[in-house]
Image (cartoon, rainbow, N blue to C red):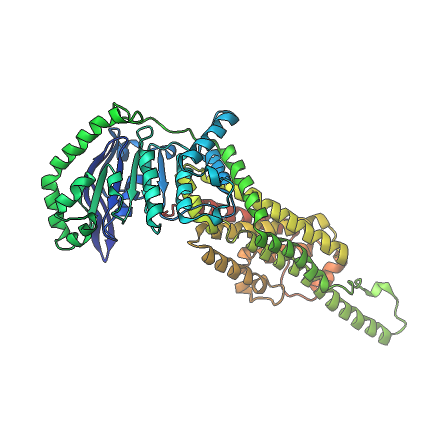
Length: 573
C-alpha cells in the first residue's frame, strides 16, 4: 500500500514560499489504478515526481507497506517504473533491441531461457510482438507509448507511474493505452498511477484524484465524480473548479473524504476475490534484482557501437575527418621538407661568400623551421577538432535517456566507463593515423617518433575528456557543442605557436592550453639540428617532451573528473 500524509512541496519565488503541492493526503491499495487529473499547472506532474522520489517533499511523509520512505530509504530502482510524457528511446534501435537493452541493464536473469521468456512476456503484455523488428523512429504515437511502458515493465515494478502517456493521442489510441494500464494494474498487485489532463475513459480507473492549485479537492471512485462536483458530465469538472477558490474546495473535501475513502476501502477488500494478482495481505512483492557493473558496461558499450554504425551521417563524418584532416596537413609539405643547412656543410672561399651562405642558411632555417612548427601545430589543432567532434554531444545529446536509465538503476560509473571505452577507440585510431600518415609523407625529422605519437594521442585524449566533461555538465547538446567549439577555437591563438603572448598572459593561460603542450612537446622531440631551426623562428619557450606529456595527462584526468561529476549530477526527467 502507498500512503501520503500531509505532503507539501514548496519552492522559493520572490523571497516567498510557494506551495506547488499543498497538504496532500491519500492512500492507494495494491492492484489499484488511479488517475491524477486537474487543470494545467495544478501540480499533477509535481505530485507524481514526489511519489517517484524525483522531487523531495518539503514536509510530510510517504509510506510504502507501512515503511516510512523518508526515514527508511526510497524504493529500489527495480520496484518503481516511471514513464515520462514523451517517449524516450533511441530512434535507430528496433523495438526488440530497445527492450533487450532494458532487460540487460535492469534485470539479472538466470540464463538465456529466462531472458527470452521475460522478453516475450513484456512484448506480449504491451502488444508489441507484431512490430518487434520495427525501428523506433517509424513508430506511431501510441506504439511509442507502449514501448515506453515495456521498457519499465522489464523489472516487473510494483509501482508504475505514468506522466501524460495519452497526451496527443487520438481517442482510439488513448483508450487502448488506458486499457493497457488498467490490465497492468491487475498483475501482481501492481499500483498504477496515471497523470492525465483528459477526463475520458474514467470508468476504467479505480479512483480519480483531482488537484486544483496544488490541493487535493477530490479522491474517490469515478462514478461519484459528477455527483460530488454537481455536474452532469466529467468534462464540466474543470469549469466548475474555476468558480470557487482552491482553499474552499480543499476544505470541502476534508469534510467529506471519510465517506469516499470508505467506499474505496470496501472496493479494495473485495479486489482479491476478483483478481488473483492482488495480494490478500495488502503487501507487494519485490521486483527483479539489478545486474552488476560489468554487465551494464558491456551492454552500454555494445549499444553505443551499434548506434554509431547505424548513424550514416555520423559514420560518414568520422571517416571523412579521419581521412581528410591528415591530408590537409601534408598538403603544406607536398614539395618536401628541405634538410637543415649549417656552415659546417661547406667551406666558404671568402668572406662575401660566407656571408651569402649565412644568409642562405638563415633563409633555410626560417622556411624549414616555420614549416615543421606549423605542421606539428596543424596536427595538434586538427586532433583537438576531432576530439570536440568525438565527445561534445556524447552525453548532453542523450541526457534524457541517461537520466531515465539512471532512475531505473543504471550505475553512473558503468555509463561513464562505456563512453571512455567507445571514445578511446576513436582517439587511438585518429591519433595513430594522423601521426603515421603525416610521418610517412612528410618525414618529420623527429629524434623520438614514439614520443611524438604519444603526445598526439595525449592531446586528443585530453581534449576528448575535457569536451566530455563539458557535455556532462551542459544543459543541452547545443550548449555543449558551442562551448567545445569556443574551447578549441582559443587553442591556436593562446598556444603561442603563431604569435607569442605577453609574458604575463603566457604564464596565466599556458597551464590550460592543451595545444601548447602537445605542440611544445612535439617540437622538443625533433632532432637537435631541426629543433635549433624551429627555435630560431618562434618566440615562445619550449618545454621538455616528458613534461608536456605529464601535463596533458593531468588535463585528461581533470576532464574525466568533471565528466564524473556531471553524470552524478541530477537532472530532472
